[in-house]
Image 1 (cartoon, helix red, strand yellow):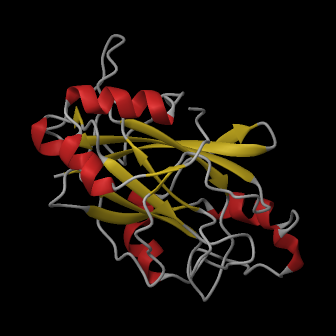
Image 2 (cartoon, one colour; image 1 turned 120 degrees about the vertical axis):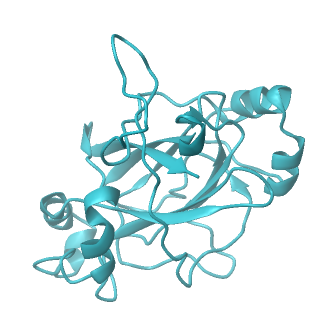
Length: 234
């Protein structure tokens, strides 16, 4: 199946069934990600540091945040979550690692992502745009193809995510974007239909509390951007 194909499945059934063979099958079905995700924040003293060509990521625990009022447990397993929504393309490469196990990659973890569209609107009811789930491969990696989210309600623009490493636990948090990048993006259509805040991040207490750790570092990728992040779970 192509990377952006969609199929419905029970995430919890996937987690219960995915041993090493199940994880390999799911990776083949969902499409393997490209790129090399970077570290989440600064390496902790106990975390291994990459050296001499090692691909082992340094990591720290990802600070948790609330899921907000718009989380939907849809089990929409797909990489491309745009559903035709207009906006600046954005590719998000994620790696899930377990900090307490020496930053070991977590295979067959379920990762949910959801965020607002260019107008600051979330999908609700029967709509599913800008929502999706991926299952990490043997290296703990997955990829989402989406757009840069719009701003709304006095909050810093953000992307929510939830990681289910198994059927009993989860880690929930959100990513932010650099303010200078947001202002460049919001000068483009369809974002420019609204007047963007002069400082879209600074007005949000959540950004002031966690922005140093949870702000992505996007780079240009064709007409859009891409960023990578290592999510460290306990």
